[in-house]
Length: 272
Image (cartoon, rainbow, N blue to C red; front, side, top):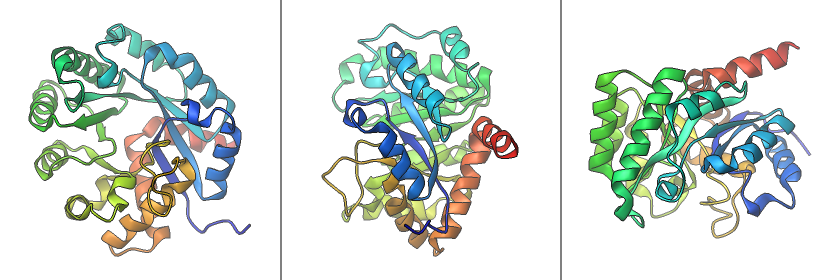
């Protein structure tokens, strides 16, 4: 099999989910063969952190991040800043989250979601690691809290699987944050979302799968996996009138800038 002439980063996936349990090693190998040379696997419940960390420890291309997903905020013990900072001491733990607000199914827990979000922001601020945000049906509160907290002390942030309004996109970009493009941007009916990405600065764009969810065409409706990052990246390249290798290089540079800890690790490993 011919190796692709580009290298991509899947900035957000969930390799610990049961969907991958039977063939996790093969999934990671397929990603590398497809040009996805680095992946960030996300812990959504701190009770699962040992599993997520072990996956990263076992696979050199896999980094990890940890936090409490907003849909789980009412069911999990509230994380402390100190808890998150202790996890951040691991050399391959590269982000805080995913955290955020989700009022689509869990609006009844909005107050604890907001409290949890502010805790994660403080951990991102103190650790220097980027915050990883999940936002759904909560644009006004999300923009308000992100802005209030940024005014209180700067931090970095990735709006993961961005599919919210243009207004929230502008608010995030105005704060210096990054928008991450998932398979949703490749769906035929996502014209307005593609326009939001096309109007954003190229140096603030990342690419992800959010696998096992949201597989882009031609795999839509099936299990997603990191190898499919290239299908979304191809759509991104078209939006910015670039070749796929050029878009891959630009978004990889964006990842290295935001996830500097991962970039430093990769640089050390390449020199070893």
